[in-house]
Length: 138
Image 1 (cartoon, helix red, strand yellow):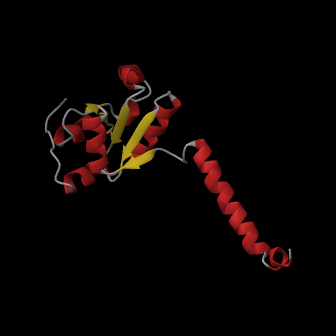
Image 2: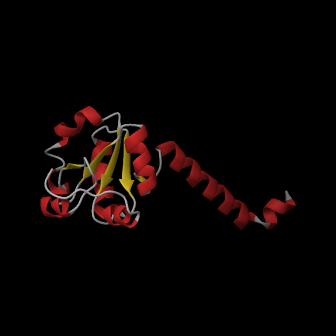
C-alpha cells in the first residue's frame, strides 16, 4: 500500500493508458485501418478485395491502381448503392496522399461496410512501391 501511495501519479498514468487501449480495442480502433501497398495487394489478391479510388476523374485517368473503381469523394454518399455488393468484402480506399481516403472510409463504415482499409500514403506510396498503374478512364 505504501508503494501505491508514493507512486500515485505513475499508477494513475498506467491505469489511464490501459483504459484507453482497452477502449480503443472495444471500439474497433479510432478510425479506419491503414494498409501499406504490400498489404493492399494481399487483400486484393487473396481476399478478393476491391480498390475504391476517391480522386477526381482527371487524377484517376492520370494513373490508378488496375481495376480500381473510381467514385470521387464528393459523390460517394450519392453513389453508395454501387458498392453495396462489397459491404462484407475488403475495400481498399485510395486517394492522392491518404487524407481523402480516411474521410471516405468513415463514410463507408457508417454505411455498414465491415472491412474498410485506407491505403497509407495513397497512390504516391503505390507508385513508390513500383506496383502496376493503369492510365485512362475506368
